[in-house]
Length: 99
Image (cartoon, rainbow, N blue to C red; front, top):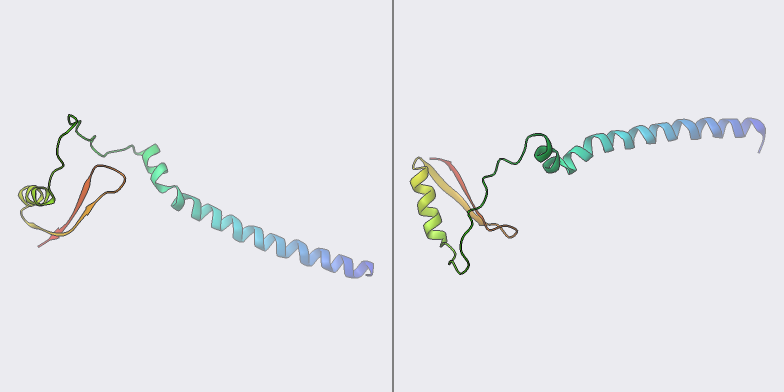
């Protein structure tokens, strides 16, 4: 390779690497906050979920029918769209929508 060809390859390599670096920087800047949004939210805003009530050992689980009845009593103008027991925590998520 001649000196002129090496200089051209150097310029091409430099500018293509700058473009790739810019692309990766944008992906990192926009992607990492999405990936760690829950931890960022808990750090700056705090965990606003109420603590779970401590029950004595041997307490039976509440039935889903009872949970649905309580949700309807608390929000009578809403309709229940979904009931999801949480696998990770002792909680049931009741999704509701305006009727």
